[in-house]
Image (cartoon, rainbow, N blue to C red; front, top):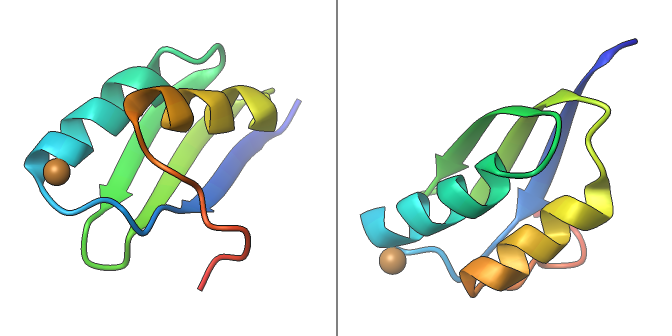
Length: 72
Ligand SMILES: [Cu+2]
């Protein structure tokens, strides 16, 4: 069973509030061990095992943000 690193481009993130909202929602997804939010690059990196990509996308959506289709 390998560890996953999933990367999402989320252009709408601007501040610490965004970081907190995304970290809490995505951190609640099963299998997620850590969430890194890079506000400069507008990138969310999710680390863990057996993570459901669709569940992470839903969590980001529920936090109130859109995932860009192709990472920059
Ligand atoms: Cu913000």
